Every structure is written in C-alpha cells, then in structure tokens.
Amino acid sequence: AQPYLAFAERGAAMPDSAVGDLLGLASPDAPAPVATEESVKPERSATVRYLYHEPQLSSLCGVHALNNLLQGPYFGAGDLGEIAARVETREREILHDAALAERSASSGHVDANFGDFSIEVLSAALEGHGLRLLNIASSEVVVQIASSPEHEEGYLCHRGSHWFALRSIVGLWFNVDSRLERPRLLSDQELCDGVRSLRDGGHTVFAVRAAPVLDVLADDAQRVEGSEPARAGALPLPSQPHGGAGLETVWHPLEYVVAAAGTDGAVLAGSTLPSPLPNSGERE
Image (cartoon, rainbow, N blue to C red; front, side, top):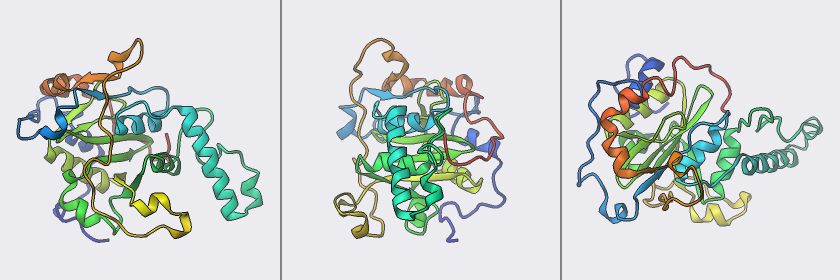
C-alpha cells in the first residue's frame, strides 16, 4: 500500500485508547485549540451562528452521523430504511440471485431491531445530496489526504460498531460525534493525528466530497472514474435553528462551543469512543 506522506513516521500501530485522546475525548489536561480571527474564514463565518449536533439515540448513530455531517435534520430512520430497501432491490436486480431475492430488505443493510445501517445505505443517502464517500486508504486520494487532511470539508468515520463525523465549519474542525454532549473543537494537528490513528488502528475513514457533475447526472454505466480535488463549499452550512421545543439539545451557539473548548476534556472524558470497542460490521 502507498505510504501516508504526513503519517510516514507510523512505527507501531497506535492503541485504540489513544484515538480518543487525539480527538480530544479523554485528555482533560490537554491544551484546547484556540480559535483566532485568522483561523475563522470570514466569508462564511458571518452566516454561521450555530452548530447542529444530534445526541445519540438508541443505535441510530448512522442517522446522527449523516445529520451532524450535513449540519441539519436531513434524515430520519425511516428515510434510511427506504434507501436500504432500494439498495437491496438494486443488488437483487444486479445479481439475479434467487436466494438473495428471498431475503428481506433489512437483512443486509439495516437491522430492523436496532436500526443499524450499512455503508452502502449511508453512501446512497449522501449521493442524493450530490456527495460521495472516498476511503482515505484508496489509491485515488491516499497521498492527497495524507499530506493535507485539513483541506477536506468532512469525514465519515467508523470505529468498532459506531459511525461518527468530523466536520470543518468556518475554517474550524469539530468532532460532531453523537456520543458527545456537544461538538468538540479540534486543532488541525488533532485532526491529522486522529485520522491517522483511526486508519492505523484498522478503522475506516471516508472523506466526503462533492460528486463530479457527470457522476450525478449520468447513469451508473456512464459514470466517470477517478477523483477530483476537494471543492470548498460542497457540504452545507448549518442554518438558523428552527422548530419547536428541545432546540437547545441539537443547536449549539458557535461562540459557546469554541469558548467551552477549554473544559471539554474534563466534561467529555469517557463519554464517547470507549476503548476497546468490538470489531463488528460497518453498521449502526
């Protein structure tokens, strides 16, 4: 496999417990990233006052990961259930497998009891928004992302049996894991080290990019292979809070999240990404 450029000094694989430290989840004494006027992109910050963050509900972290990534209530469990059924139907049509045809729509891509969704379902959901997932270990993007992971706009990560997202907003990176109490500010170095340790630990990380124009408009048989550089503005910005009661549980003032960075280590220690986690399939 092609080596990571910025991650060349890998040595032994980093233990799982260190991943939480690098993503700021278990280091109460670690210095917090500092947001400066230079670090916040002025052309976008004027329109962003809140961050969207859904807390964990049951085993719906796949739903939460997508909504936290897109910064809004874009999907519900029912929406992803319908997508799972379409993905299953498409697979049956392609494979012409009688045994597969007899399986329920929930057998391979959604667990009817717990709402666990597969990577195929999450990918199809994002395709509907003109986005695609690229495994950072793939030859298409490994060098580009390894050298400058902060130049992406978002990552969808799978660790153990848990989906979560990392998102760049107004020039700042945030861990928007649904197991957190609120979004957690990350420095570029924390992002780089965290993405590296996830990959080295055998977990899966996908960069979220805009799909090429032809990839959105053309039929599957005509899709263009290859990768384009990440384009700024591919992912939507959070909107103003709207809805009824309970807004404070999902909408967090940006200034508050940044100001709270100094205490997040103590507040969030042990609240997310417990180690070790079981290595189950890429669902939930």
